Amino acid sequence: MARLFGTLAVVLALSSHLFASQALTSADLGSLAGDWTLTLDTPQGPFDQSLSFKDEDGKLVAELHNDMAGTQKVTDITKDGTNIILKFAGNFQGNPFDAAVTLTPDGTDKCKVTFDVNSGQFTMSGTGTKK
Image 1 (cartoon, helix red, strand yellow):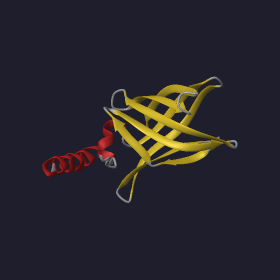
Image 2 (cartoon, one colour; image 1 turned 90 degrees about the vertical axis):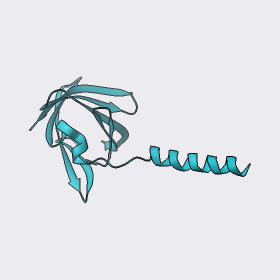
Image 3 (cartoon, rainbow, N blue to C red; image 1 turned 60 degrees about the vertical axis):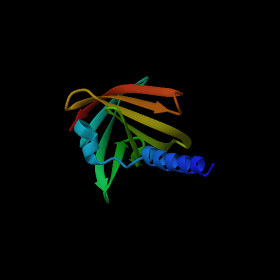
């Protein structure tokens, strides 16, 4: 019985190490590193915003900026295959929302963009162009 508990303890210790998330660095971004102009297709027409990836005290952060909402700092940045996903909580005209922006590389200076609001309640697609 002691051997069983010892084995379980080792397995749990190893599995927690394997699944622990590590912060991304600029190098993890590959061709997506740097500054971008994102153009989203909306019901009101094209909507442009800027995206900048930065290193802040050794941690990767992003800043999304547009004229309507100002600047949104994003610290929840993950990678899924070649996709980079930015997640943040925002507020537009008093309405809180959760957002996920997925960037999919499309060459070295372009990307495909999906902007998902409140887990699919509203989704916009578009393109990104490296500045």
